[in-house]
Length: 355
Image (cartoon, rainbow, N blue to C red; front, side, top):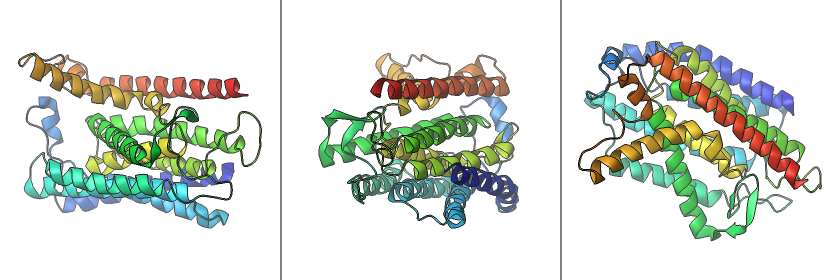
């Protein structure tokens, strides 16, 4: 069990650590540089031209790590893992097109909102429909129609149509939340390492207490918990290797290619591990960043141009208050770590209560 998780982590780490500098050279040679918002902190203008689309390395390293792990262990890929990887890759492809347009047209905006929404919707709806199929011998599908917290909430069944809507909201929300967090060197990458580490631990624990292996009162009815842990380990390792080059001063940015892929993978893991509401705690930092934008926009429209923050997302507010970029990143990492620790405590306390 742990050997598979270790293989996935190490292979992804090596691929990402070694592959990222190659991507830096490749993108720099072709002039694939980051465009910077003119209304952002002026200290960010020196970052203009830094290679972007580094999310391709994270996605490819994750895919290579997962399938290499299956090959090394002689195990067959599971439906749950393949669907999460499909969601990650599909949203990453949408982000790649968005990033490429930004670079090609030398502007800070890529795909038009409608085109981007269509691309995200196609991938998300396909995932939401497929995730209710592929029933195993125990009758479990990768996801269920119930809303979940630590396990499925049996009294809150959505039905297939509302479930697709629920998935759409979750995936859209998390992919955009990670995207908004990706505004400082290493911020989103470091927070993602911790979030996926939480899902490694959750997947391993669910596997040890699976209803397929033990019929105790506190067992988990999750179709493929170990394989979800392997996917999370591959994502964790990929982000960790990328962080070496993405930490300040960043040599490369993940771009929308990475942030949309990571947000989608996070949402997919939450849906397939039946921890959709627990993910609110695990990814607490991402939600704070997203809500800061929503509050700022709402205040501007409803209070006749008045703003709550100096700038949104929230990390820019603290920059404009005079905080050094590295200080903002480290303190936000600490907040992300506290949310992850809290979520694991809640998860374990819930298990104890179920016994």
